[in-house]
Length: 390
Ligand code: FNR
Image (cartoon, rainbow, N blue to C red):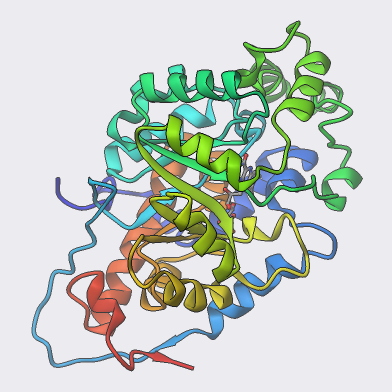
């Protein structure tokens, strides 16, 4: 119960007042290749920059003279109550940024009553994360070609207590991620060599991360014919990295008993296709600018998708959120819920568990402030007619 402003006495609030402070500390603390993996977009990083430019352009008209108010940040999504409309987006190779990051994020999510979405390519399995996340666990799926394998992965997520599944559809091709390559990180080369090269600088980090990060394909490893990194990687690339069709979505829909969200949608036509195939929610995202550098800023794509869906299914927004104000902006433009990827990893990499708490605190505390400025008591109150200046 209560609200999501985690711990009330939070001395990190002065040290890291903004997500950018967590990012700065993270950059100092983790090796260059891990930072580049986390922070980069793709190609010229245009789509990633545009996410910020477009969000900063969204102006909200403040309203006053409403008396003292205590804004209510809570909301219900797919039958589950959350203390704030912000979740932790799936981030692959999580254990590479910080050993055990998945469990820290899941723990912060459970205590803060916000969702944590585990990636298919994390260093922890649904079985490990589920009990820590409690009711807050979601699972992100890169879709296996083999339907038997798909069923097994879904059963594992379900049996681990995860009730919301996000099917990621915006990876029809692996993007080139030039900054990561320059930094020496490519899944092809394997990450272990890079980790070893870091041993001299930060031995404790390198050893712990080698243990956790080497198991980056932890969920997938069960199915591969062999446990060495290269065998598992090859298996992942051929079996999981594919471009699912509408038929595939039908098969997935028939199999998954929980809520099904299609992640990575930008075009209203795609949103309608997914809705007609039985999606319970549309997750609008340009993958944080990591997939297609000519993609529109996600926030610019939001209004048309909201309009096309007409409120029949909820719209989840991510890409570029760095403050509570950004959450208010997305909700004002029609989103029902928001997620953030990098901010929570910056938090963990900067200060471990306390850093994850602080990232959530920054976002929720700032959202409360934005709601007070806007004169909104509730999240739907952020949709005031005429509230968005364009
Ligand atoms: C991602 N994202 C992602 N998405 C997904 O569906 N599966 C995944 O495994 C990953 N992996 C991943 C790794 C890293 C390092 C990042 C930064 C992102 C995309 C993620 O879920 C989300 O869409 C974006 O992170 C949102 O943009 P912001 O909040 O990072 O700006």
